Image (cartoon, rainbow, N blue to C red; front, side, top):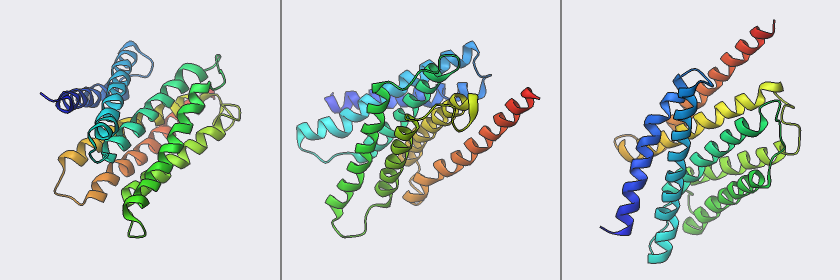
Length: 227
């Protein structure tokens, strides 16, 4: 078996484990033992997805002189940045810790910013002045916007916008967002009878609506607990 084949098997296995284990933290009561253990399994599986995606999408193509696999690169990058920032929100910003961002947090956001610029630049390098690939443009702009927002957030108190539960909302949004990215990868590979742009966009749109409703639910719950 080739090196590419070995890493592909590891990548698919880790992605499948992430899709299965990621359902548990979303459905289980927040903070209990099952939620924590399934969350750890999910985050570690997603780390393996990221590493194998970088190997398959960038390192091996550079070694063998083949074309970069931007699909794998996009999914690996976005999904794990969501996981990383979601875990950091929980671990370091939950009161009474409320620790300031580390250099690693700023470096991760800066790397996402550079990756977004790369996606857009690489798109125009391939296409020139022709019609750009909308998927690369959308994800590139999203990476730039999200990374700048995070870098700006690092400069202000963590609870400046949503109060003391901001860490919880950010943890929820980012972890569910990572699952949406992983699920998007799954449907893009396996759903071939629908227009590609629809397959790419539908999980994010539907998931975004779901996240919004979920955050509103918890905001009402927390506000009700105060009164």
